[in-house]
Image 1 (spheres, rainbow, N blue to C red):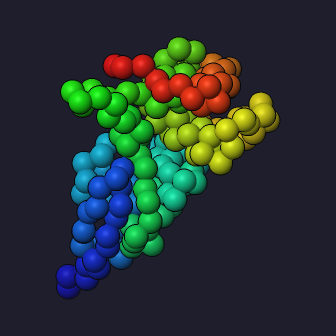
Image 2 (cartoon, one colour):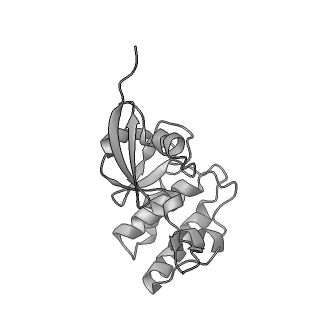
Length: 172
């Protein structure tokens, strides 16, 4: 017996995608398998590690816990959607959070990095001047197996400084 597929319109990183998915398909699987956006990592698949964090309507959410059909019509931003085109040559500019992670050496193996960045980006979307406590709280749901937490917090502070100053990140 074939599993029915439902139509879903996903708005991801500024693009519109019409998909037909099984009702039980997670947003994570739709992003990675259907849209080939593999920056969002699939690790625990239970909402424990935060590696799958994306922004849905500006809020950090675990994509492994969301059904794709429940995200119909919502604005979804993945790590791939943070870089922006800044000039006529279409060279990408890093988001301030991405740039801060580089400047503060806030990554080691890099596996948790997309989720960490998305959590901090969502925080800065809500408040441009977060306290240290808010920065720590924003990344509390993201596990870093390498233990780069001190530099991740530094990167959160640096990103907030960049956002407050109106700076964009660097050209890669």
